[in-house]
Length: 398
Image (tube, rainbow, N blue to C red; front, side, top):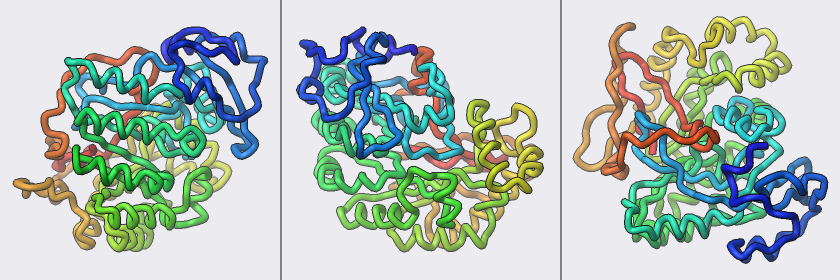
């Protein structure tokens, strides 16, 4: 496994290094797996009874902040991934391929072999203290979910949030995890010092489908209640209806009640995107589709032919024409903030028109672009994607 880029060097299980945080030296209870003691660059590998089926690989990170790849249209220049792999186990997850950089597979290993950067908050504090730090917005949730189940064991996010707020660094969090509620008081307090952007991913309204395709996630209802709790704490929340699944969640019958529930929960806006199937995800997704909805396999093969990761342009235009009026109907269009009145969801142009770049959230204004390419660790390789429909700007992501 390629652990050298993730940690501070080879560490023997049970050792206490001088640079290890107290949370590591006073290790959490769990069954240490001595057979992987020789794995280079990791602290220990452990299981815990309350996390059945999961294996935690604890590492000491050399860095916490990751540069966004050069040329990205994201309105942030930096990300933090306290975990690699994700127990949410979303079949469609675009980040699955990033696990292959660690010599894990993009399927079951991604769901169960979780890399934990146990010292990430301490390392982040040192990085933010450098005179060169420009206080650009930092995003969490761009690769794997920061509020997945492992966070209930390791509690890395409070330290990260505190470090960012202490250095006057704007915070952006995207999650499916209802564990976010634990940190709402801390985030509300941090929002008095720095901009705090929260987004909840809610893509599936049908309970049976949601449990099948997102088996490790909180229910849609629980996520909606978390949106409401964040609003009650005085925090704005946007919702990502991503991915929209062709022939499963793309009808008005599915979308309208979902958008109505999102509005009723108090969300500020909705951003959407059709299913995106990267090469590492495609076999995993089609295996699921063949088991659960075999009649849809030919339709998906037509929508995602060959090596194509995007649905056909014709489909994306059709989806835009269906969902954008509903977003407007429920008052969930992105307003662009103070001083911006540009509609990010204009009428769909004719096929073949060139798509202009999307607006940048004013909270992300000032973030540096043109960052250097990341090293080949997969650390920042799985940033979210959205539909680029001809004639319409991409919805703002933050």
